[in-house]
Amino acid sequence: MSRTSTAILLTGTERFFCEWSNVLSDALRIEKRVEKRTKNRQMTEPAVELMNSDDIRRGLTRIAHEIVEKNDGVGKIALVGILTRGVPLAERLAKLLETIESVKVPVGKLDIGLYRDDFSDNPNLHPAITPSAIPFDVTGKKVILLDDVLFTGRTVRAAISALLDLGRPESIQLAVLLDRGHRELPIRPDYVGKNIPTARHEHVQVHLLEADGEDRVTIYKQSKKESKAQM
Image 1 (spheres, rainbow, N blue to C red):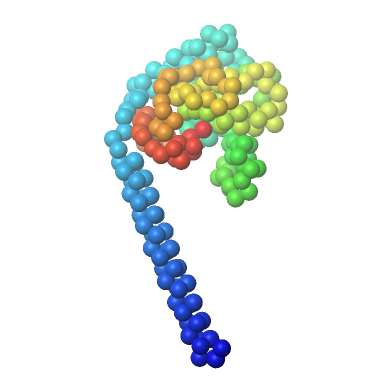
Image 2 (image 1 turned 120 degrees about the vertical axis):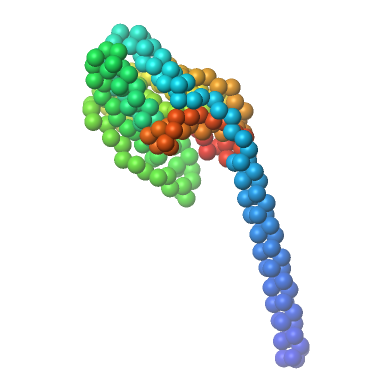
């Protein structure tokens, strides 16, 4: 084969791959555009309000009275909020308990990023780590974990593992603002602000004054892929 023929052949091959690359790029751009439009459509669907500020206040107040009744007071109680929104809930609950029992209840915050059950399976997963702050010895305490939404139970499992690394509590109890069902682990809350039947593809969004500027809980539809983010 002559040099001219070889050059023509190489040019044709390069042209083919160049055109095929352009086709793939166009396809990827279209796919991303469609995905973005779908996500925007899901996010702009009207959210249904499940709880307002009064509902949240009443739910926490009821939980506070249930804690006092179940534990014969709050003498050995310590509250630990799971970051992020479990922390302000724990702080509010501590104030309610102090109002009821005239006893200041210790409050801590717990990060469970390194205890997630999908952390070791995915080496590319780098969860944002916020330092835990437990200003008391958990050993011998009746520790009550606080979180905003209970879903599959995996976040709570991680929180229990993280807590047990800090000591040996007398007991670990669980309080949540909302229980939306769909458990994947045998975990049940001791105190619930509100039980809400949901579909797995629906997203429950908790807004708290300390983090979001308002107290409000809403629900909206989302894709199955997005729903896995809530655990």
